[in-house]
Length: 294
Image 1 (cartoon, one colour):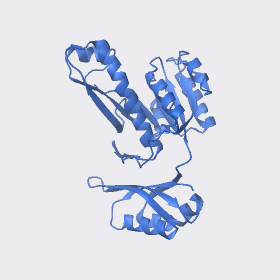
Image 2: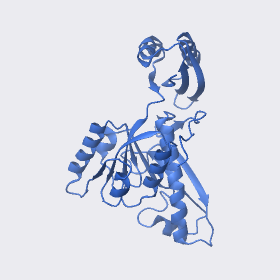
Image 3: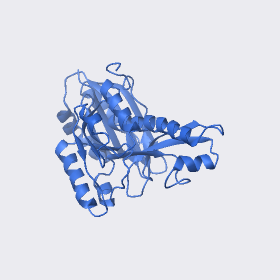
Image 4: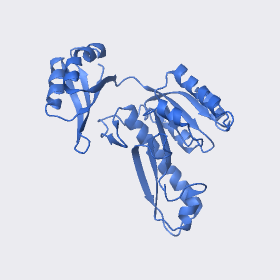
């Protein structure tokens, strides 16, 4: 039996939850998980509902028949088949820890996505990627050819049908035009020292300042470099007894975990952009389960 989810955003008002619940029940759907949030400051309402269509109704009928209710509440909404895997393009440069972690999670089914391509500005990980039967594209980027390089990137995204781009430590700045075109569809990962330690060797800078916490942040990419709406963050403690190299190794582990969790939230439609921030609902029961052990 199929399992669907419904995502809703609209102005906050009374009766939204009742209207959606009544509608789904009337269509023979059994709600298995539901999350909602009323943002008092912005006056926006967010909701995600997982349900099983016990009467066999399909997405097309559900979408069409909800239109009247959607207009009454000025809703932006979408139904999603939870068995369909989102198509993803991963971009990487020369730091491969996030890429390798994502490949492993993908391989065991812990991250249910369809990786349709890996794009890099170097050849370092071609063999690793090709051995996973995933297309690998090397697109060199310079100041002179950046528009052409991004045109190549967009062509791959469009031809593959990718819905999400993941910057798994891709060390090139995307143009404002590309960020706007792919708004809400590009996720990045970086250390959590910004804006304290910018530029080269942030972990070395942190070591020299004696920081006690290091971490990572994953966010949606916008034209404002590394300042997009945050999806996921985490930290780990360090001490005076550890070296800059220790900081780097520990930081890589946190980056991998944070990026994977951010992708998990996005592909399960749990993450909603809310101005300069996000609403991220808890994971549904069973959504972290792996298909196999290794």
